[in-house]
Length: 472
Ligand SMILES: NC(=O)C1=CN([C@@H]2O[C@H](COP(=O)(O)OP(=O)(O)OC[C@H]3O[C@@H](n4cnc5c(N)ncnc54)[C@H](OP(=O)(O)O)[C@@H]3O)[C@@H](O)[C@H]2O)C=CC1
Ligand SMILES: O=C(CO)[C@H](O)[C@H](O)COP(=O)(O)O
Image 1: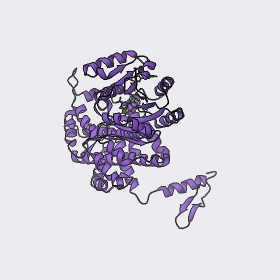
Image 2: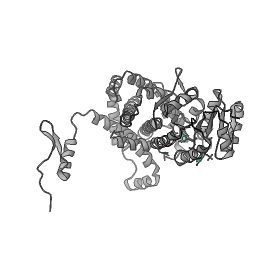
Image 3: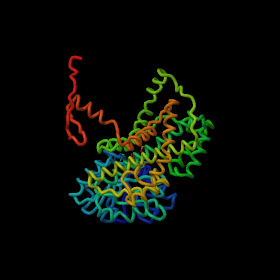
Image 4: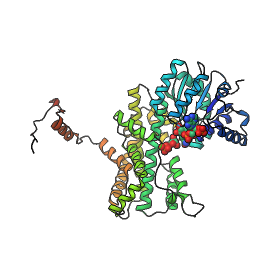
């Protein structure tokens, strides 16, 4: 007999913690996983947490679906990509019109659009749900970004709001638009996450290599910064990562970890979509490229052998300057991420609520910070679509961009790579430069390709009389 309020397939890190969160909120949840051993492990864990009475484990997929009350809501939390399509195909024969799939992984928004469109004629609802917060967030309250059918959102809303993180009592969960809107917003969340993490890593590099600070000393600085305007989850965990000691050797763990960053796709997708939309997101692009160069360890070692080790000596910037530089870089990066969402919203007709997005990112998600509270208030007042033009942030940027400039210049002189911070600074300088240099590019384009240029007051698509370069 159907007894479960909701079902969940995929009991790895995220799925098992979400399922425990759902059970803890008083809902009965049916669970299934391709590899049955994970179901047994999950049941044992649920038991140890006193939640097994609200768990219906099913190793057989048909029995799993049948155990969920109609109209059914089934969460899919498996590896993104082909496994999601495979899971939908396996579930479909057992679902009935009116049932819904809530796909909660880090899926490419275009895949979600496609799946949404394929299931709509079958009367199977489809929600593409971005979930952020990692293992701990999934268990105790993630930020939840929902896209897809509005009707299905209303069906799922009570459970999703119950399990979401709360900021001053408000659930960090919202419906953001049709089709892939929720996954799109989660992707940009991750792009911003990449920018935050890379800028923090660059500042750590200045501390380690330019100021000669130990991990313990750097940890103490991040702990202090977490009490100020940079207060955020990522600054907080950076302090903890830098303080950790390896039990085997007694040395700082961070000094033992290989300097090659992994990446699973959302950062690259953010950079690609920004370029496709014609919205500069240079800080995010810089962060993605930095992960890629980090992964080429052998090539970097070979190049170091050719060019020699860094010869720039120490840097002389204060910790206050570093803090201000990080703040300025972060504002630029968020401005870019939100500008990408604003343009996507326009192009795809999603009507993305930017204030709501900033609001649901204030707790639960990886980029949660004090700063997002200020941002959501600014967007709610409808002040601007680019954060760099929002009065509160204009004053912060005016005060902090000289620090960003000082750090980037000091880094360049000391031969320290700062790809993300320098990209943010260049974007800021270009964004506020009333007279740029693209007039020369237009001249060059007309020279080699007769592409035309504009002279204000004279006309568009004009051409120059250029000398011939033939035979030279
Ligand atoms: N880990 C994190 O911090 C976060 C992850 N996410 C996203 O959430 C989703 C789940 O992540 P995570 O919990 O880390 O798990 P993984 O991404 O590691 O995926 C493992 C799960 O997918 C299942 N799976 C893989 N291939 C198939 C298939 N072909 N058919 C059926 N099931 C399959 C596995 O089943 P089996 O046990 O049989 O191998 C297992 O349950 C991903 O999209 C991820 O990007 C989102 C936010 C944070
Ligand atoms: O979605 C997440 C956090 O918000 C996941 O942890 C994701 O895996 C992070 O991306 P990457 O693995 O590329 O660093």
